[in-house]
Every structure is written in C-alpha cells, then in structure tokens.
Length: 187
Ligand SMILES: C[S@@+](CC[C@H](N)C(=O)[O-])C[C@H]1O[C@@H](n2cnc3c(N)ncnc32)[C@H](O)[C@@H]1O
Image (cartoon, rainbow, N blue to C red; front, side, top):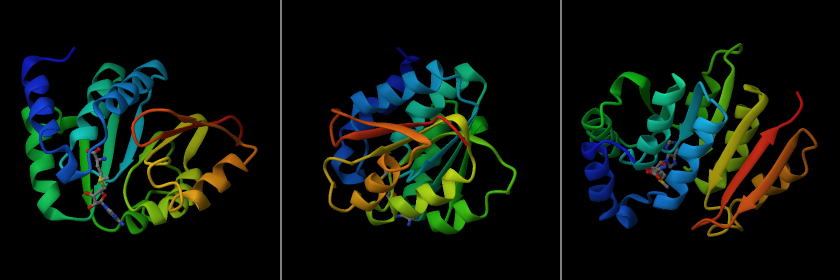
C-alpha cells in the first residue's frame, strides 16, 4: 500500500512490537483509513514510542494535507521515532513534543482546533487526556484510544466519561487490544 521504504520500516518495527508497545497492524490500517475518510487536518497522538503508529497516522495525513503532533516522555523512544519518520519521508508533517502528556496538552493554545486524537500513553491518565482534548476537539472531530479492552480496568474512568457524555457517539471496535472510537456530534 505504501512505498517500499515505508513498508520495510513498518515490517522491521513489527519485529519488536512487544518491546515498544506498538499498536497492531490492523489498528494502524484502521486509523489510517479514518484519517483519510474523515479528511483529518490537525491530528494529535498521545504516546509516540518509536513512531510505529505515527507512521500510519502521518501516511494518511499526507493525503489530506494534514499535520500530526505526537507526544512522548522518553528521549530514548523519541530518537528512533524521529529516525523512522525521516526514513518514511514524514518529518515535515510531524511535530514530536517531548514531555509529560498532560503538561503538553495543557499548553495547546486555547483557540487551536483539533479534529483527530489518538490516545495511547499512560492508561491511568486517559481520562485526563480526554478532558483536555475535549476543549479543542471540533464538532465532527474524532477521538480514538487503544487498549480499552486489554486494559479495561485502568481505562474504565475514561470509558465511563466518554460513553456517558451526550456530546460523543462512541463504540469499541474488536481490534487487537480494543480500540475506542468516538465522534463529537455537538459542542
Ligand atoms: C503504548 S506506547 C505507544 C505506542 C505507539 N502509539 C505505537 O503504537 O507505536 C505508550 C508510550 O507512551 C509513553 N508515555 C507513557 N506515559 C506518558 C506520559 N505521561 N507522557 C508522555 N508519554 C508517555 C511511553 O513512554 C510509551 O512510549
């Protein structure tokens, strides 16, 4: 589907998937489809790791003319992530921000509008990420989150909040680890 370099990078990263807590290939493909189908322009990812999921997201954003901001705490993961983005020719459309996800999300300018977010960092903080992102997600925007089945207890406060929020229409998809997808139907 992608150019041969990108396919090679993805295949190589799949060999160490468990060590870097990467999403499954099926999940990457689904997120890429959503980015393109919903014509996403301003995407955020919480939890970069070595950039595997970021490649899937950014490859979609190449087609939509969009941009990805991805957040990661550890420099030892940011270094390979940036290398992987570069190899795939994606550096120009990805901003990697290093630090605590909550702090970085809180720094998003008040008026910045986000139309897509992928949450995949500290499972116990999903609710905090959601509360901040909700201030920026536009009507019609999409929030996704991985591990909602594999870490169901840890993410329960987040799931309760988003399923209980009448502004959002949510579903859990039977992808590996469980993927939450939610659309903000009203402000
Ligand atoms: C599950 S991995 C992300 C995998 C990545 N989305 C992928 O599929 O390729 C979670 C990442 O979030 C980072 N992380 C965890 N808690 C964080 C926090 N509070 N702030 C920033 N990054 C965090 C971890 O260092 C780890 O690399």
